[in-house]
Length: 460
Image 1: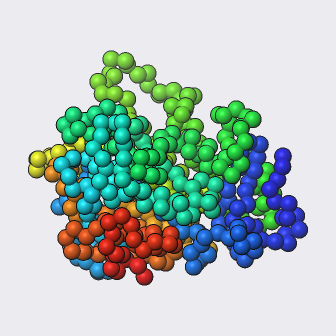
Image 2 (image 1 turned 60 degrees about the horizontal axis):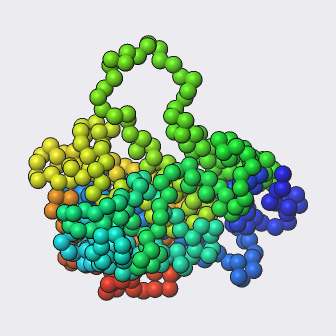
Image 3 (image 1 turned 90 degrees about the vertical axis):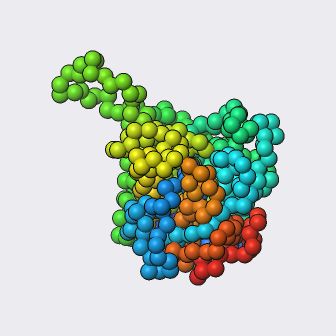
């Protein structure tokens, strides 16, 4: 086996951020270690880091179908705000959170209910009305502006993730191709970026990103086995804090692998019921949806990619526009997301809509807590990130594009003034937020799309 640490036997130089654990057909980037401090590299190879010495990351998480608006907005503003009922799962992360009220995407203010509000979510433009031949969003999405700036610094310029396959056909109710509802990331006006839907494939892509050789071992063998020899050799050269950090990192990777294998295999095949099951007791409903596990695995992929600096830009769609995803896996929910969002002020539908909203926020909190637990330099990966969460419409019943439900977590290396609820004048451009995030990302831009400036109070 070829090792990637020839200098370690004498420990003369610090590790570089690009150091890898390597095994046959696979390579795994390292998390930040104290041994990487004061690394000297040629000027052409310098990372684009924040003032803390860590790279800055941007992620955008998109949720379809809006929110129950009377349960979303905190009553107080400023730093003395209290989280609303929907946002309660974020209580432990309140100091790392920015709640933004009265933002809207003017480009989506047309007759269509969903598609313009989805494809234009990160572009802040108005997409062309199309039946599927001439897709055009008339812009570049915010994430791709960031990727164009920092993409050369990482093996993967940006990572686009989703759960639902691309929806095809035409929605005859509004005259738009459903393809528009499957994309938020655009590398150009006519170029929606394909999303990876299989967490196993994302995992393997992250593993091999820095060393793209074809695997020589069977695909079902755990990838981590291939790099453990390098890992053990490296650990012997590290200080106690770094050894502990490496152990936590490798345990996390192993846990993800086992969950992926278990999901792919359909569970433990050696398991047998204590009591024989009667086929007559089979329920009429379909088999339980793996959606919750799929979502958390995708969020794990984002955390792993950011922790290892394999990419600094990521988007994730919880679902496509007009998502009819069945949420009956939640206690108290019997129907689909899209159906409950068209609540018509029916109290039972509103109740179910709220439960779905809270579940999505819990998943957001899951990702944030993982990032907050990853130490890096004098902070955490979360503190060096900006994690956007939002929907392209406010209320699913009215398709209201005003006062969008928008959150940002993480201070972007100390540049975002988190721990606040900021309320702006009605119809403040969403693009003003994106301009501020790109400014914090050092993307050499102070404007974006139809922005009129950077949101007052969002930057330190």
